[in-house]
Image (cartoon, rainbow, N blue to C red; front, side):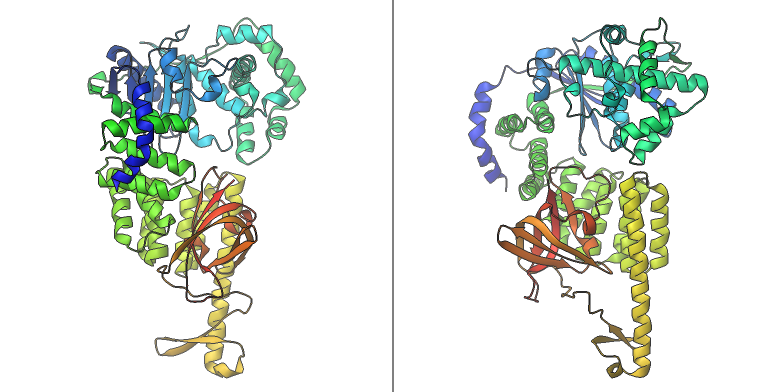
Length: 628
């Protein structure tokens, strides 16, 4: 399997080899919670690892129930100078006149990276380290966290000092204060709505003021809330979490924004600023740190992943071609190619790359997870042995990785038809990630498929209690209504069947299916308004069609029909249980749980379906990959 993919990359390999700079010396420092890769000295790398471990300890003391950082590894590139930093920096910051950054945080579902320039020292030498780690700790809030508060919190904590006696947090930056005093503040009605695509986030002058003012507003609200025993910032955050628009949430929590504009301007001109002190000194056992030299090919495979994540995809491909030319068994390079193909919407190619990594006995749980998951999504799961073994291997390598249990549940409930085993796996996903509403919705669906409606509703009510975003709350309530309707439909059919059995089938009209339950003949009458198609194992010929989703219809209990329209061509497909369809997003992140019955109409999609015996319809849906 490996040779065809190596051949595809050979066209890049010569260019990559000829353009490669002289080999650099890379050192890896592994601490309990971080991997630091540096092209500077091992001493500098140890210092960065120690500071990160100390800051982590501070965060987990301040926020004992806050965000965990044990799910996805954190890799830190501690780069010796600006030139090294620019080899991984996003293109948005490389153009003339753009913000000159000394640190950058990049994360994905698979990886977390902190990029640091070691030559960027200031009054707080570890400000960049703390700033980027704050972003990481706030990552699970990004669905509702506005840019100003995200950056304001990072700026607030970046000037933390940790010494032998205490921890000092929230210290003001002289540069921020002077900048705000010398320039007109951004009106709050603008500041509150700035997002990551705004010029205020990239252009040098605007960006500097945005960061400084975000710090000032966050500092002002945190200090004033502490002094006055109020909770305005908490109220604002709660409103944003509920899905309220930023200006409205701010007016509700902070009051008149024009008055707040004036108060903030006066605040930055005062002479003294308060800060927080904690009589807590984190201790880190550096004897547990491991230091080793790393060959450049292994580092380049990781650097390529960073380049792909920041949008420099072609550079990443060239670098990976060079890596695989040097080391054809470099599993990290295969995994990174898989991630690149997955992110740009090529799931079949991604499956093959992850399969290569798995065959080479990768130590990455993600390689096995995505290979198993993509086999399900791509309709390549007739032989479930490979799916199950790869997902179980992912769990063996990382028992805390909840998506692997969820994927197994998907396979067992859909292709495998083992609902009890599916429910066990979904419960494991919920146990590993108890705050994930989607896993509880999936568990409830499995129970509903077994007609265990009271249990399903109990799970859904628990999901409703846990839901935080407006979208999640709406989807949970939709599922509750749907489950109750399904329950009523089943009970109605059972009552009709009992009546038919007593009175005789001929007197009822319509069509009915007679089943023997024990020694009783039960007739199940079909609703004429709901289309019925064969429920067959997905062993028919597989097809892939791309186009716009039209005529999306859902019927109780969980029947779905839709058409995929490409120009004048329309392909009609169905599912008798749309909860078993593998829905995914290729080039965007859905906000909360997407309800396929109400939210996919008109979207572009790649649909995989299997032919069935009923030739009045193209086939039964296996997966739907949505794009924007």
